[in-house]
Image 1 (cartoon, one colour):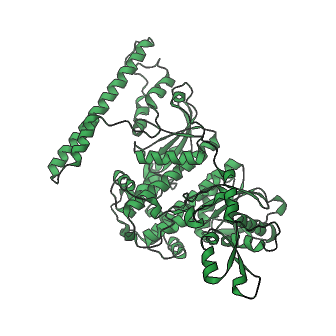
Image 2 (tube, rainbow, N blue to C red):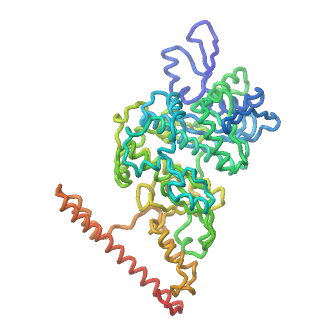
Image 3 (cartoon, helix red, strand yellow):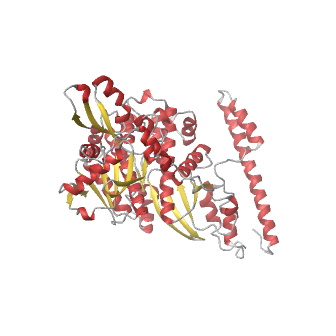
Length: 578
């Protein structure tokens, strides 16, 4: 905020103000202080402040890599275009093409508010500065799963992977018997900081690549000149871009909006941004009508390639498949199923992924998630197309450091919502960058879980504006096994069309989140299981009956598929048998 007195009395004082609080607390300023707020658009102010620093203050921009801070001289004539990543409670990513010329291209709900909210719950810290201090003394490898932990040094060397590459943040927690209180707050803080700063950097890299930009500036109140924060972002940008991009930081990065507001005094172009004016612009930011996604008929056609295969395990791998035996791992994410379950175990005490999903179905993520409406009020931020219901910062509403004050169901719902949306967002950016329209999801943390699939589907629909359909795979937990089966060379199927085999057998029947109905016998067993008493032996018998029914139904289905495949082989004139 910046002040301007138009008279001698307090009632005549007017303050320039920007940000969500300018709208949310305007009545309080007027009624309690007699001060009127001249409300300015937040993104306008942030961009104006950044441009002023970069064009007028020598040494305002700098890099921070390998412990070394280096000033960067940028000619005002060669400043635009650039990407501005503003890290507040959430993150806004802006493409700036000139003075007062910019576009908010995207954002992420994983921002400073997420780090601080989770830090309160996991470490008990009272302030963000305390969280940063804790992170300086911690070791994230106590909780993080690295590539070496998964496949060993020999495989890493064979595949050209660094043994210290982060595979899954909080991934070691899922196999540990430790409880939250058994971990040092410093290690928890360090793990949180690396997890989310790497994620912010990865999304920034993907967006910059999509826009063809090589200059990325980072600002916002959650950087605070903190060395580890800047070091993590710099390392990640350098890693993902293969040293083709640099992360550049700004002095006074937490005051870009205030600086832009201060500069607006006497500016004839500036106007008081009323909510009514913002609402008038809302239609210009509405998404186009969703286009029809890829139909099942197209999957049954002859051209399935290329597609993006997203494998959600402890971490996430994203693979571009262009043909039989022709694929390339494009990128991955350290925020995968291991992260979800690891944090779930620490926050809720659950012992399995199924238990976590069950908790999440009974919870309300809005109890802990900060929405745009919480910041800007009931009208949201229509100028940039963000309705009030949009999540601004996952876990951003957490105000207490007492974990016991929050329902485990709500925490589980917030975890599932936030991480599945993040996976969907990154998958969309990667597919867009690679020119792919088909995205298939599989992995141990999907496994037919309706809630998980629904969240991923919603995420892809939101980020792609309906241009990409999310598709899941039957038998998706056994793709590796199926692939190993087809690797045999002498099984009498040499003449079989490989393309048809992959389409009919490996992909199975694509579906979009709707699970097939349970066999009647399984439904009956589920009902009887629900009435099992406390007797342990009786419960074990019912469990075995339930498992037997599932196996029987699966065997019958496989027999039907086998008969259909044999019929096709006979029809095509093949004499060999499986």
